[in-house]
Image (cartoon, rainbow over all chains, first blue to last red; front, side, top):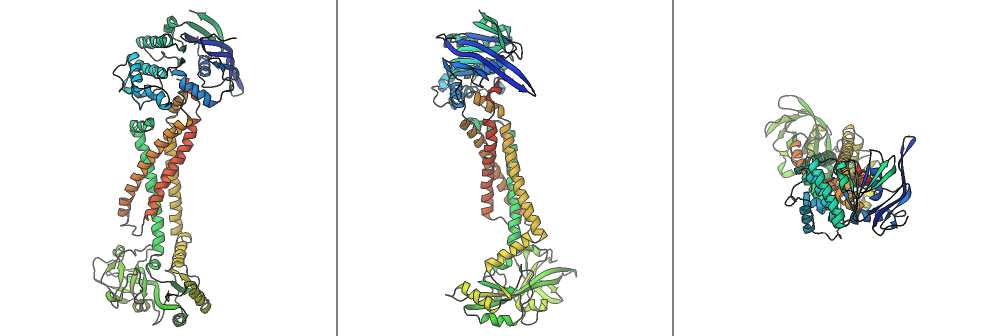
Length: 231
Length: 367
C-alpha cells in the first residue's frame, strides 16, 4: 500500500502474539493502518482488543512478530534499539493514562525532561514556560505533581510531549483518570496539537467524549481492525 | 543529573533509610575490623614494643605468652657469635596475683634486663627492685583502687607505684612488668633463667649472616626477627585459638553482612524507581543516562552513609575501649572500608542499573 504524502506512521500487516503458559494469544492479527499529519485518530475497542499493543508498536516501544512499522516512509523492520530510541526521543510525544510525571521534579522541570534526555533538543526554559501557558498552567511551573489535580498533571504531560515538537503524539487513555471538565480540556489540547502543530495524534480510548474530536476512528476487536470510520 | 539529586531530596525517608543501612554496614565493618586488628596488635604487643634485631627462643614457641625457659648456658653461647653486639634476657610466665582483698588472679609476669629499649615500659631509672607495673585498663581487674599499692605475686611482696598504658590484657591475664631478677624470683627460674634472648646485630654486620651463624651454633633454638616473631604470634592467636577464630569469623561475617546490606539497600532503592526508568526509556533516554542516575543516587547515599558510619564508629569505639581496652582502628582500615563501601555501592548500582536498563519500555502503557 503506497504512503500518502501526509503519512507519518504506517502499520503494515503487523501481528503480535503472547505466550501464556502453553497457550498463545494473538494480540494483533495482520493489522494495517496509516496515520496522517494534522489528524486525530482514535483507536477504540474493548479491553484486550489490541489498542495498546498497536500503540506500543507505533511508538517504537516494541517490535511486531511479523509485518512492519513505517515511519515517514521508512520501514523499521531492521531498525535496532538505538535507532528506535532516537525516534522516541525526537519524533514521538507520549501521553499516558497515569501521567507518568516525575514526582521529584516540578511542573516546569517535568516539561523540560525531554531536553535533559536529549541535550541537542533545541528547547529552552522559555519554550517550556510557553507550553505550560498553552495548556492553561501559567504560573504553575513550580508546583510538584502531588500539588496538582489529575487534570493539571495530564496537561503537564501533554506539554512535556509537545516540547520536542513531535511528528506524532501517542496517547493511551488520556482522559480515563480525569473528570469531565479536565477530560475535555485535555482532548482540546490534543486536537490543538494535531491541528495547529501538524502532529499525527493517535489516541487509544474508551471515552466517547473524544468522538467529536476525531478525524478517523479505528474500531478494534480481538486484535483486528473491524471498522474504519472517517468523520 | 538533576533527576538523581532531586530524587534523593524528594524522597527523604527512602534516602534516610538507605543512608542508615549503609551507615550501619560501615559501622559494623569498622567495628568488627577494629576488634580483629586490636586483637592482633595486642597479641604481639610486647614483642612489638621491644627494640631488638633478633629473638632467640626454644624451638616451636608460638607466642610470647607461652615460652619455656632456655638453659642458662645459651646466654654465653649466643653472646660469642660473631656479629652479635648485645644480648638481653627476658623472662615471662604465669603467676598468681593476690589482690589486696586476698582473692587471686592469674597474671603474666614479665621481666627483662635493663635497657630493653623501644616502647618497652620498664626502664632502670624509674623501676625499683620489687616494683610491679600494671596497665591502667587492668587496675580494676587486679583489685587496685588506688596507687601506690602493696600486692603479692606468687607469695612475693611487690610494690605497684605507677601504671602504664597500651599493654592491656587480651587474654584475661594482665601483664605485670618488672625487673628481670624479680620475674625470675616470682617464676622460680633461679638466678640465670630466661625465656627469650634479644639480640642486636653489631653495626655493619649483616643480620641474615648473623642469624645463620646463630642457627648453626644452636640449631635446637628458633631465631626470628622481631617482625617474624610478631607475625607468628598474631597467626597463632588469630588462627589457632578459639578467641581469635571467633573474632576472625565475626570480622569476615561482619564484612559480608555489610556487603549484603549495602547491596540490598542500593538495589531495593533502584527497584522502587523501575517505573520511572521505564518512562525515561519510553521518552528516549539512553542506557547511559539511566545508569548515571542509578550510580549518582547510589554513590551519594554511600558517601553520606559511610561518612556517618565512620563518624559514629570512632566515638562508640572510644566508649567500648572501657570494656575492650585493646580494640584498635588503624586509619588504613577505616579508609579501606570507606572505599570498599563506595565500591560496593557502585557494584550494587551496576547490578541494579542492569535491571533498570533492561526494563521493557512498553510497560508505560499499563496504567
